[in-house]
Image 1 (cartoon, helix red, strand yellow):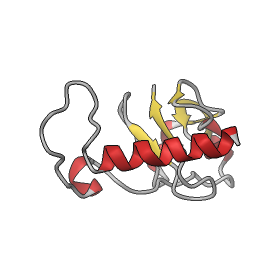
Image 2 (cartoon, rainbow, N blue to C red):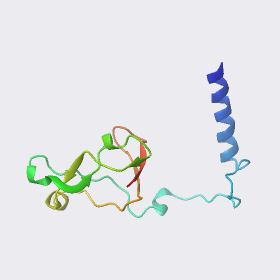
Image 3 (cartoon, rainbow, N blue to C red):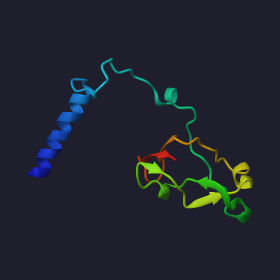
Length: 114
């Protein structure tokens, strides 16, 4: 019964927020509708350096994987690649504070990169 009441409360709050009857403190202007691509500097999936080239790995460049997305922020990665691995793949460097969104496998995981 308690779970049902919480689901109902959640539904109410979501409806109130999206209809703009309920606003976050300090936000009074109407919402603006935007496409995600208008708010992003770069969008797309990266590319994993070929594992056939061991010299691409165990470098100093953090390489983000889905398993690194376990909370709201990422401060370290399990894998690191070399500059050669970066240069020979579709991977790219991402600025600190960027938002990442998992598009494959664990769809919907989001984190801020540290």
